Length: 233
Image 1 (tube, helix red, strand yellow):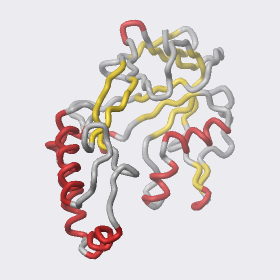
Image 2 (spheres, rainbow, N blue to C red):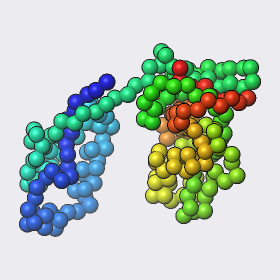
Image 3 (cartoon, rainbow, N blue to C red):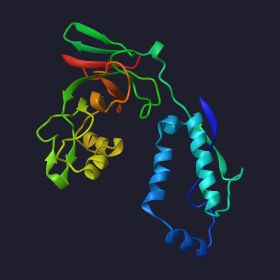
Image 4 (tube, rainbow, N blue to C red):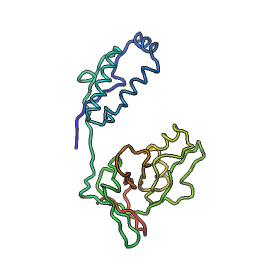
């Protein structure tokens, strides 16, 4: 599905004179900055989800602040510029997930057990591979942490916990938990896919937490095993 949405382009499109830059910088303070953060992070903006009314409120607020700062718009419609987005959705009616042990197979429900992420997957496919639990699955050299050491991940789907150990500084944890950084080390170790188990304490949703979530196909492969995950029909 293709959608056209209006977004505000903040960088490189606003023009301000050196005099304005000096004036703005001299009046900057933490209170005004925090006021912006509180408004944009408020629940009334609904997470500023793409295309939502909350996002439109955030855009209007940003435009108001840019105008107050004396910036000149350079979009096709004032401070706004149409941008094309492609939206991908998993067709759950034609998809399935199952955990298989020997001759026993347990189907997973998309309503209660798991969901398939469309962020890294763009085509329909089938994947069957053994599972390996790897804790948080992080490699953080600055803290001499390597949770992949000694594990055979070649041709495996890894199952990991979202988050990081409590003794890892926030900045490091945030960096190494990003999808790209985490997958870099997992792929190098031979993993072909991931299953992310969210921490229920960090999930801001009502009802029971998903025991298995964010199942993502990363590689095209079929590998038989006595314990495996079947995904994507």
